[in-house]
Image (cartoon, rainbow over all chains, first blue to last red; front, side, top):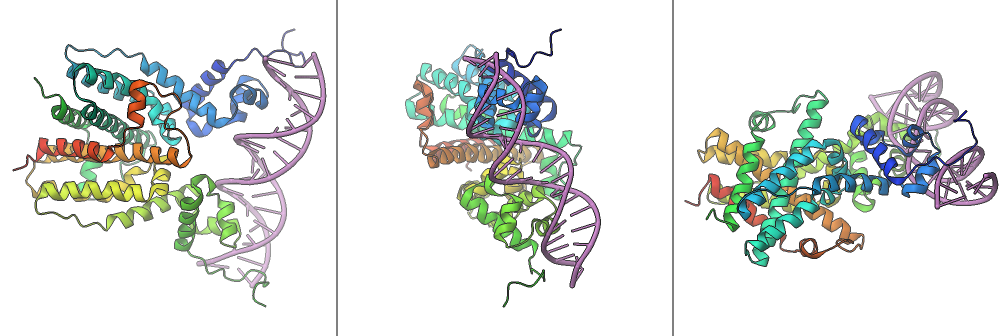
Amino acid sequence: MSSRKPHPRAGLDRDEIVAEAVRIVESEGSAALTMRQLSARLGVNPNTVYWHVGNRESLLSAIVAQKAEDIAGVQLKGTTPRARVADGVHRARAAIFESASVAVLAFEIGAEHLLIRPLAVAIASEFEAAGVNGLDAGLATVSLLAVVSGFTTVELRRKERAADGLAPDALSDGAWRGLTEFDHHDAAFDLAIEAILDAVLPAS
Amino acid sequence: MSSRKPHPRAGLDRDEIVAEAVRIVESEGSAALTMRQLSARLGVNPNTVYWHVGNRESLLSAIVAQKAEDIAGVQLKGTTPRARVADGVHRARAAIFESASVAVLAFEIGAEHLLIRPLAVAIASEFEAAGVNGLDAGLATVSLLAVVSGFTTVELRRKERAADGLAPDALSDGAWRGLTEFDHHDAAFDLAIEAILDAVLPAS
DNA sequence: ACCTGAACACCGTTCAAGT
DNA sequence: ACCTGAACACCGTTCAAGT
C-alpha cells in the first residue's frame, strides 16, 4: 500500500533529475534524452521535471556543469610550474575523454568552455606564479586550451565513429587515409603542448 | 493561370535544396532548419525534400560537405614549405570563421573533419615534399589540425555569445574573466602554430 | 512548494497514391 | 522519376488546476 495514492510528494530534487539525465546520456546518447523519456524513467509527470529544471536547455547545461565540477577537483602535480601545467592539460584531456558522452553533449550545445574552465583558471595561476607576464600568460593559456579542446574533439569523433562500427573514412585516399588511421595522438598532443610551453617557459 | 495545376514537375534538384538550406542556416541558425520549413520555402511538399535528400541528417552533411568544397579550392601560397603550411592553416581558420553558421552546424553534428579535410591533405603533402619523415609529418599535421579546430571552436563560441548580446561570462572571476575578455586570439594562434612548426620544420 | 492532466503547436518520417 | 496527402509516433512547452 505505497504506490497508488493520487499525487503525493514525489520527493524529487534537481540533483536527482540531473543524475538520471546523465545516466540516459551515458547509456543511450544525448538524442535519447527527451523531457518525456526522462520523466517517465523518474516515474513522474513531465511538468515535474520542468518545475525543477526550467527547460531542456538548462538541463543540458546543468549536466555539463556538473561534470565540470568533477573534473575541477584536480590538484596539479609536479615540482615546477611547467610540469604542473603539463600535468593539468594531460589530466584534462584524459578526464574529458573519460566522460566522452557528456563531452560530446558539451560540444553539441557549444559549452566546451564549461568543461575546460577550471583548468583555465588553474593554468593561468601557475603562469602568474612563475612570473610570466600577463600577455604571454594569456597567449599561452589560450593556446593550451585550444589544443586540449581541438584534440579532444578529434579524438571523441574517432571514438564515436569506431563505436558506430564505421570505417575510419569512407572516402579515404592517400594522405587522408594515413591521417584517419593515425594512432599516435598521445605523441601529437605532447608535441603541441611541449612546443607551446617551450615558447613561454623554456625548460630552465 | 500558372499556379493552380495539380502537381506538375516542381523542377527541383538536390543542389537547389541544399542551397536553400544553407540560406536558412545562415540567416536563422541550424535550429530553424526543419524539413517542413525548408519545403515550405521551396513551395513544395515535405516529401519532395525527402525524395531528394533522404533525411535530415544527410541534408546536414550535404550542407557541410558543400561548404568544405568551397574552402578546398585553396592553393597554398609561400616560397618555402613552412610558409605554405602556415598560410594554409591561417586561411583555413579564416574560412571557417567566415562561414560561421555552417561551421557551428558542423560542430553540432560532429563533422568538423569534413571542413578540415582538404587542408589536412594539403599540409600532409607539403611535409612530404619537404622530406619530413612519415611519423613526424603525421604528428605535426594532426597537431596543426587540432589547433585549427580548437581555436575556431573557441572563437566561434565567443562570436555566438557576442551576437546573443550576452556578457562574455556571467560567472567571471579573476583569472577567468581575463581569459574570456582576452582578445589576442590572432597572436595566440600564431604562437601555437609557429611553436609546432619549429618542432618539425625549424626555420632553416 | 510541488505535482498532475490536458492541450497547443510543432517535429521527422513513412506509406499509398497520383502523373 | 518526381511529387502529393494523410497519417504515425513522437517532441518541448504552457496553462489551469489540485494538495
